[in-house]
Amino acid sequence: MVAIVDYDAGNIRSVENALERLGCEFALSSDPDFLISADKIILPGVGNAAEAMESLRSKGLDSVLRQIRRPVLGICVGMQLMCRDSEEGPCDCIGIFDSHVRRFVPSQGCKVPHMGWNTIHNLEKKLFSGLSGGEYVYFVHSYYPTLCQDTIATCRHSGQLFSAALKYENFYGTQFHPEKSGDVGERILRNFISL
Image (cartoon, rainbow, N blue to C red; front, side, top):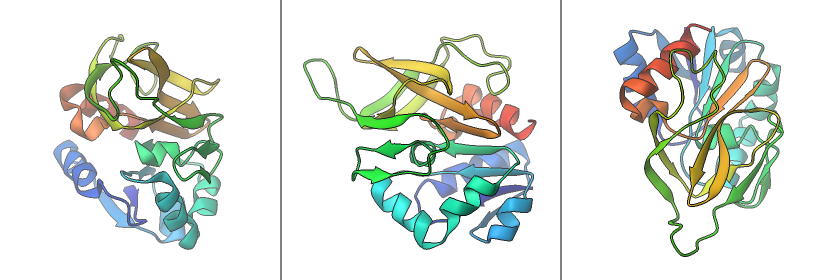
């Protein structure tokens, strides 16, 4: 059973659709006991990090997430919430990943938000099994996680190299949207489900 964390963040329906295509059993929940006992947990998210973090805290889910020992996948803002902090707010985040979330600086040739297809490189094998690097995935974000010891994939937008994916122990995160990234995204989700 895959649990999708329900904390009033956007992007839930597209994650549900992707899991349906994979034939996965899933449920949307904010119940701590259910989340802790689920086989896999997905923390989706779009929108403002400070508001999303406040929603997590108001439901007590920030501390619940820290307790989970099964594989957890944060997507987009969901991954950013597992970093140390974010300039979007600004706000302190859960602090699982040793990364800081910074805003892209608009400049000549640098469009903000970073929106559309871009390539990922320097891939860690478990989450990206079957991929060699250079594959295109779909991004929509104005803030990015900095490079750190937890980085397991990188991407470059207008000269800025950032963490496209992070991993610490049983926690994984993707800045891109695997549920919107076609066959490549489907493979990444399958790899996560099979962890």
